[in-house]
Every structure is written in structure tokens, then in C-alpha cells.
Image 1 (tube, rainbow, N blue to C red):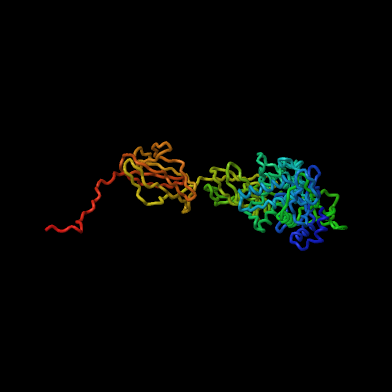
Image 2 (spheres, rainbow, N blue to C red; image 1 turned 135 degrees about the vertical axis):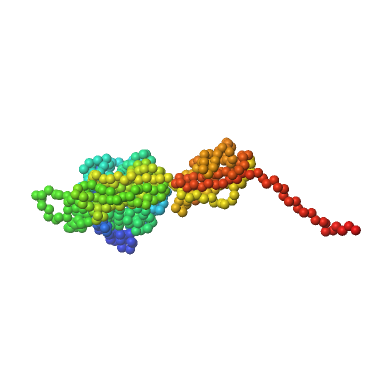
Length: 568
């Protein structure tokens, strides 16, 4: 299939930007791994051009830099076909350009969910489709059941360091069935260590399954939308794609399919899609030039020694990660933030050898644990950061949610289990340090009447509006006695009965609280209303109940009629 695409490209693609990118990607000769039922990608050692500043540690991205499909889009733009319905034969061209119905539905639903949860990401469903095409050939041509689960597992090659990244088992074989090394799993080819934090339940069945196209598509969407990326900006889209598989050739291939699907596509019945044939790890097959083996790319983690000594067993070179004995706290300050606010301090962790020497260029995973809606900047509960030359990794800033209380941030090293610290963090309730009335009108009332003005106050914290702050209002006996008064002004409850304490008050988005109407009994005098908030802000408001002024109003003076005549 790929060779056929190549012939068409050389005949007529030079005039289009997409085709130019396609030729570049095609000549790179890239590919995918194996499947558990021998359909689709076959395991082979391979190479791919790394992106600038690529890291050899495959655990840094979604797929572990596993191989992928390199077939390129047809030259003709996709057009919806009226024959693409269930029970109707699908032509080769339709299957080649169409997307299986369930798989297409999963992409669109995932993008719709992200529009609500992360609107600033601007994730197009066509990007998910492009990655799904390159990673698994749209779940092997749509071989899924009615719930979107693949018929048989789709597995990449084991990441044993022999031609690929070295990622030892992280899931005890739960997802990939391999208890020695990790393998990329499912239609979006997540490695287990990434699925552990990126996995989502896309079909609402209560399970996060990387083999389910709805779960995998939603997880891929969240993965692409992390780090605050805006995918409507080409630079951010490129970064997101490269974070999925760190290869410039991979980027070119995905963008080719993305542009193709943007021009329009159509659905085909599940199971009728065409499985791609070009593979990024194919260096001796039909994608290689005749009479010449494509050399491996030095950017991939593989043994490039052209003359290995057959008498010596192959050895995997020691990586910085292998030298880490433990993780240490690197001076993290107390982690406390008010609900809805950013934490001002960050978590710092240092990787050390057994002798206490710092280890750089290892990846530290920070995971938020506990009953909390606090996240890292970007909305994720997991962040992975590489240590610097001093062995220190600094986690992204934490953003407190609305749930108050304690939670834990756990630091671990990617690919190994070593002693590591847990960090305790606390989210405190919304608070205010100042309360003030929004009006200076005196609050007065006659006995048995009602106050004309309602009490409204504004809460602030360090000069800024304090929203969602809990408050209590009580009619107290005196300035020195906060006991609830049993006479004087009062509020009314739903049944019209007098109440002199209001609880469960909360400031609005503008920091305002407007109290209900106040009424007066027959007691005259000066009374106090005390309002207190979380955080210690207090305001005392004076209320006056006095009888109406008995003084009669002056009557208008009378004057002689201008027509009256003086008496004689």
C-alpha cells in the first residue's frame, strides 16, 4: 500500500504542501509493532528520526516512542460516499480514506468533551483521527465490538531496549500481558505507565480500558491538551504531537493525515477499514530502496555497532535512571493554598545515588493522591519532570480546587521503584480579611415595622474580591457580648418566624452578601448586627429602632386674598 502511495506521490504531489510533507514522511520509512492476534503491525527493530531535543527515554511520551504506521493519505480529497452504509460493499478507495463508524464516533465524542472541560485547548477531532490512523490504522480498520473495545489486543513490541526504548514492566502485565517489559497498548498505543495517569472512562462503563476506543480517544485528547497547549496554534499542536511520539517523521505523517481529514471524510462500517502496510521499523522490506538496507537512525535507542562480537552476550547500557538509589526532598516549603487559588510554593525533589551524588536527566513523576480536585497547572493530576544537572526536578505549580482538606503528592522515578518522599498539601476554605458595607445609609426603623434598606456587605482578601467565602450574621446583645439577642430587630425564616442568626451565607462572585429584610419588634433602642467570615473578617452594623417623631409638621401660613379690600 505504501509503495503504491509513493508512486502516486512522485507523479503528482509536488504541487501540494500536504504531498510534500507526505513524501518526506514516506522516505523516512517508519512503522508500528505487533498485535496479539497477528493482524496489522509486526514486531521488528527499527529507527525513526528524533525531534529536536528528543529524549531517549521513551517513557517521556504516550507511546514510549514505539513504531507506527507510515502510510500516507490518498492524493484525492476525501468525499463522503453514499455507499458507506452498513451492509453495503465498500470499495478499496472508500475503505482507504474512510473512518470506521464506531472509531469516528469515539473521536468526535472525545473532542466534544474536551470543548467543555478544556475549551482553551481547541482540540479538533481530526487530530485524534490522524493519530489513531498512524498508531493503529483506526483500531485495525475498526475491528471493535459494539462498546468500542478492540477484538483482540493491539500491542506494540516489547520495549526491552533492543531497537526501542528500555521501559521495564510498570503494570505487572495488567494491560499488555508482559510482566518483564512494557508494550504500547490499544488503538491509541499508550504505554502502561502513561495510561496509569492519563487513562479515562470515555464510554461511561466505570472502567478505564486502553483497549476501548472511547476510553483511549478521550485519554489521548486529555494527553494532547495538557501543559496549557492551544492546539489552534501550530507550534502548540506540533509540541503536542511530538509529546505523543518524539519524531519529526512522526509529526509529518500525523499532520498529513490531519490535513487530509480536515478536508472532509466519511464513515465506513466497522471492520471494513483498510489496514496500513508501511512501518517505521521496516528497513529491509518493500519500503526500503532496492539493493540497499536503510540504516538505523542514531536518534533511537538501539545498538548501532555494525560488527558486534557474537561471542559476547548483548548488554544493555546503564542509564542514569539505573543509578538512582532514592529520591530526597529538595527544600520544599509548606504547601498551603486557599480553595480556588494557586499554591505559591512548588515541590522540589532530588534524585541521588546510594552515595548521595545527584543524578541528572532522569524523569520524576509527581502524582496527586487523595480526595481532592486540586490539579497541576494545565488541569492534570500527574506531571513528569526531568531532573536538572543538580539532580533536582521541580513539579509544576499546584492549583487548588474547591475541596478543602489535606492530600498527598507522591514523587516516583519513572521506570524504577526506589525510596521516595510524599508531600502533604492542604487546601483551606475561601477566606476574607476585610468586610465593609456597600452603603453608608443609616439603618432605622419604627417599633413593629421593617427596615427600609437591606444590609449589603463586600468581602475582600488582601485587597482582592473574596468570593465563595462562608459567613454568619447574628444580632448580638452588645459589643462585648456576642450572645444572640432575644429582642429587637430580627429576620424571618421561611415560615415567617423570627430568627436572629443566619448561617450558610456565602459571598458571590463579586464578594457580596445581601442579607434578607430586617424587622423590628416593639423594643426601642440601638442594636448591633455582627457579620463574621472564614478568615477572621468581622463587621458590626448599628441598627436603630425608635418611635416616630411626634412633633406636628408646621401648617402652611394663611394669607389674605389678593382680591380682599381693607375694611373701611
